[in-house]
Image 1: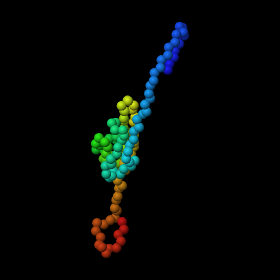
Image 2: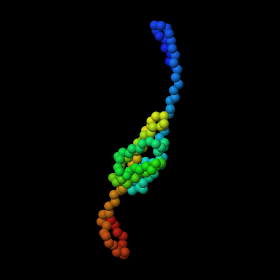
Image 3: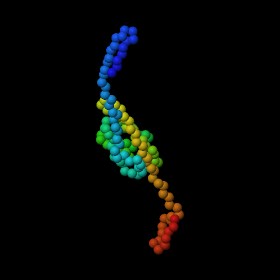
Image 4: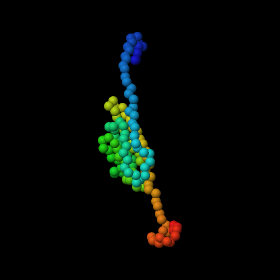
Length: 130
């Protein structure tokens, strides 16, 4: 409500208007792990509410797919490991906008090296050390 009285004339007016403040949409990532190994199988996860826009950084071809209800993340496209950020932007029917991010880590496979291992041994040769 706003009321105003004119200083010179003494005339006054009042105006009232009701407005509604709508809450910001809540975005939830479900079943997205925080860490993956590069050789893990592709993993499915969901984001609600549906209807937003997902971006991924760094964006590597094949890293993220969407089938209309759930996303699939494939850690194998980051063979050297990587910190990967998912950003989901959503605007509801009232025009209220929200953005939520999730950062995960893809770990590279460990390096295994055999040293001093002969290619052949006899069954009665005893304990081999390498």
